[in-house]
Length: 321
Image (cartoon, rainbow, N blue to C red; front, side, top):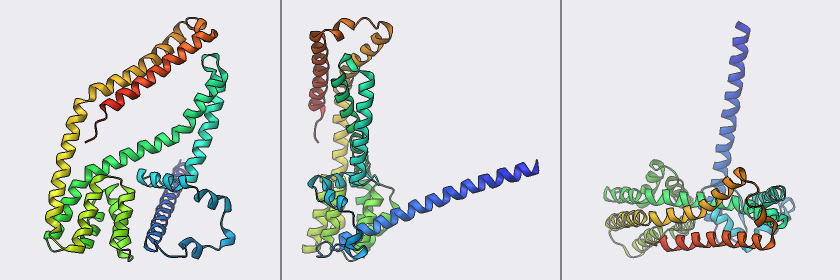
């Protein structure tokens, strides 16, 4: 019995140490990537890239270099940075390709509406777009969380400036006290400033990481104050109040347009639910439509009409504030 207890303790201890080791390795990898990103920002205009210094040209992957030269790769990388995911653009493309293959296989097996080619094409497109939709959802969630934290951050900076601290010191304190995603973005700007990056370069990195109008107002206020002078604390306090009022107005508009959004979702889900229920309870009900060419066209037209109605309603209720 004592031997069994000791063995169990050793097993739990081993698993715990493995988890701690994995966590430390992930933390070190994240710190290394952050340091490399700060170096790339600081040497923004240098003729020799940082990775050329750290690794010989002979060891570089030519296929990856060719992919990175594509125009869409920079846009993908920027979207991933905005989402807060620790992914590379190559990984996202690989996941999209894998999802496309899995979707094509699933579509061929399901044979939707007895149309193998159409079913394969539809499911392959869905599988290819699934990782991209996940990234888009994470990006939207990350930006909304940053926007909710930003007014408090402006008030914090304004209080720091009124207390006599410098702007760089205020950013450093804000990065230490704020949770992610705001803390991570401000920490990156503070670290770049400490490494010697110009203010406009560091602030441009913040604008690229968080594409909000409020961020552009904040950057403009900071840059203009450094060039012409003025009471930056008072400016940031007023900007915080404006952002809060706009968020309040956006919440009111969102509450008033909730009926339209729910209507669009119901229009999209009811036909799918009815089709799924009838397919289980009465499999022969749609046999005439799925086997007849005209019936298939009618089903496709109905599906297209439902999707079109959903996007039209979404366009109507999506009010920009």
